[in-house]
Length: 114
Length: 110
Image 1: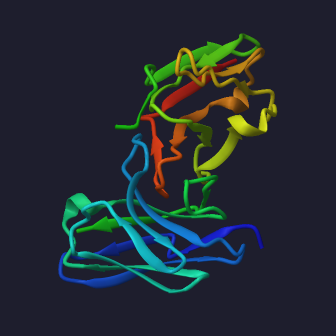
Image 2 (image 1 turned 45 degrees about the vertical axis):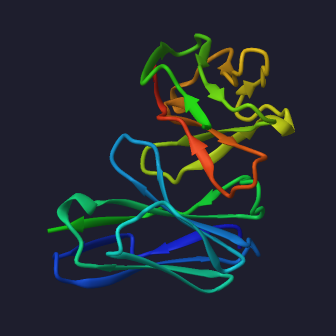
Image 3 (image 1 turned 180 degrees about the vertical axis):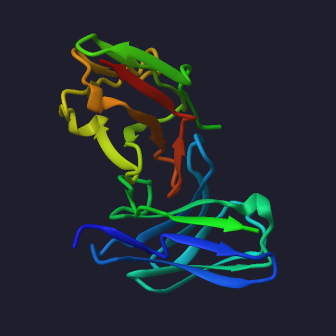
């Protein structure tokens, strides 16, 4: 399996809901990433996990909470989001941690916050 | 600070014409450069990386350290090349972070 799989593909949530985005890879990659991408913009880094430990948090609001339960899974827990958080959330993995190498991206989870 | 600049937000060429997407970087150390492509409704994927020095889908890119550039070139553009292209920089400074440029949207007209 050489893909990064993200679920759900689409998510609509209210500002008081709690939901989670999931990401899975079975390539043995030890670095996993969450990015946020707005329309026609480059991906913005949110979090990096290296060997299942959080190594980079790009000053993301606490309403986004990442979790890496094991080397294959990455979650992003969402709570009390704002409409401006609506975006495509991309997960990526990489066989190399430091320095950053080739990233393998998932198709993304398109989030709409009402 | 590390930075990647893609000066053209939009680039439009005709099928069969040469195309060059510009990328300049700012980094004092030894960089590693990548080009990523995002076709409509597809995932972001690696197109090529400078250390492999290969041609993918007819595209090539050469790292020019003197000009701090990593321009993407293709001699004869095809309609299926229409996509969003991002240049990205990895630094040897001990970080998992990949620095992306703002992207260039390439449209190849028939």
